[in-house]
Each structure stands twice: as structure tokens, then as C-alpha cells.
Length: 160
Length: 160
DNA sequence: AACCTCAAAGAATAAATATGCAATTATGAA
DNA sequence: TTCATAATTGCATATTTATTCTTTGAGGTT
Image (tube, rainbow over all chains, first blue to last red):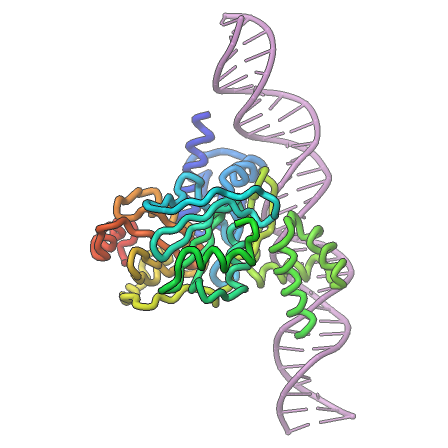
């Protein structure tokens, strides 16, 4: 529907330019733009947009957008490996390499947990990680082969 | 205090191994581990850990860990640029380069919004982004200079 | 010990958010 | 168009989560 789509756009715009801490607050911003809706509908909209309420600066709550699926990074000369059968619950789907970067793709919402585990192991092969919602990027140490990275990761992700 | 710290660890562990959808649920998992606390305390714990409730697979809600600050990537031979005076609300703090990667550091919780904007512009200089809480990583296209990236980003981040 | 200070936590409650249900409206097929 | 089906929404409410206020107790300091 047209109304809903433009409202979702408006929500995206508002959330990316203002610090919104509650649905009521967002509701009144939307009202300024001419959108008339109830909190119930807004709750559903946010769920659909997969917006999350985080803890921002000064410990204040804040609604932030998460990444839409289509913006996922696709490696240029990435050596792809077939995703193993899903027997673990770590959400792992695939890994790709591009130079000193590895990109792990996970099921939605699993990325940060996986990155957390990888960080915890403090592998010498990996100097840093960053996680989105369904993507983990690993920065690989110098003089380290992709194979070595895979071997190191196997302790954490047996199904890699 | 000792009790609290081990409880926070327990929370991290539980959240990274199970799909928890509500505080009550987490509370009962903690009870199994011998932690006795109320929902009020748990709410405060989650706030302190900056845990967020996201929308996971099948549209179900799920609490996930966000990254602790200490795992932030620090570039080896990164060419640093002084952070401009904060006149915008985009949260931009600094940008560093390392080979085909650029790392943008933002104020807490601003990263995903910024990445969202960068994605939206679909700049040819940037083939992909990933955002944590206060860090955005950009994968730079081949044969693209750092200067070109900066120029491209200026439309989105005037204070870069 | 006696005192102070401050983090931690519970109880109760406020505030915020999600959802079941019914009504309405859009979409599509015949 | 007309009917059937599905999507959207509001209302009311359940559920969930945050917070105020108060008490407790751990560590320090004298």
C-alpha cells in the first residue's frame, strides 16, 4: 500500500536524522509529517523494519535502523566456500575472503554473537572483527593465509 | 562486586548460546545457574551491557549482545585525519584507512545510521559497508584512492 | 569498632511496547 | 463488477520493560 510505504520511508528518515527514544516520540514526529497512526501500528512498522532500541550516548535509549538485506557486501574476487549443513546453532552460513578481509555471513541477528565468540578466542590470525546484523567482518593479520584463518576458526565454528 | 560481575558473565554466556526473547525468559535461565534476581535488576544489567532486543529469524524477538568497546579495531599503518569539529548530528568522529579498508569511528550508536546513509548513496568508490555500534567499516573499490573516497563521502558527511 | 559513602538490589509501579480481535480497506481473480 | 482473499489498522488490553524509592550491605577511612 502506498500510505504504508511512504510512512516506512518517513520512519527511516526520522530515525536517521533524530535521536528517538520511544515510540510515542516517533509518533509525534510522524504526526508533524502528516502521518496519523496509533502506537500499535508503529510497533508493527518497527518490527517489520527490524528497528532496534539500543542504549546510546549518556545511557539513553535510542531507536536505530538495522541494515536492510540488499546492502550486504559481495566480495569481488572472493573465494567462496559452500555453507556446511546447519547442525550448529551459531547461525554460520558462509565465509568469503578478499585480501586481508574475511566476510562471514550468518543468519539474521547471529552476527554479533558469533563475533563475540571470535573476539573471545583472541586468535592471532585475526586482529579485529566487526559485526552487523547478519555479517561479520574479520581483519586478518599480516602474513596469514586464508587457510590458516579457516583452521583457526574451526574451533569456534565447527561447521565452517 | 563479585556477584554482579559473574552474573553479567552468565548473561553474556546465555545470550550467546541461546535465543532469549524476553527478560523473564532470561531470568529463568539465570535461575538455573543459581542466580537469584528480579526483573528490575536484570533490566539494569541489560542496560549496562548494552544488550539490545532485535528482531531475529521468523520475526521473533531476541536479545543480542552488542560489542564491548575494547574490541575496536586499531589500524596498523592507518593514515589518520583529525576529527572535525562536531557541528553535525551524524556522529562522525574520525576516519582511518588501511589498504582497501576505511574505518569510520562514530559516537556510540551512530554507526548503523551512518552506514545506512552511505549504503543509500551507492557510491562507486565503496563496495560494501558494515556497522557495529560506533564503528563503520567500508570496503573500498579497487583502483580507488583514499582521497577519492573522502571526496565521495563528503556529500554524506560534510564535516569529514 | 564506628562511621561514611556508594554500588547494588528488591518491591511496587509507571511507562513502554506487543498483540488478539474485529473492522476496514486494498488487491486480485473470475 | 463482484466476490474472495489478504493486508492494514485501531482499540483495548496483555505483556514486557524501565524507573522511583527505599533498604541493604560491601569497602574504605579515621
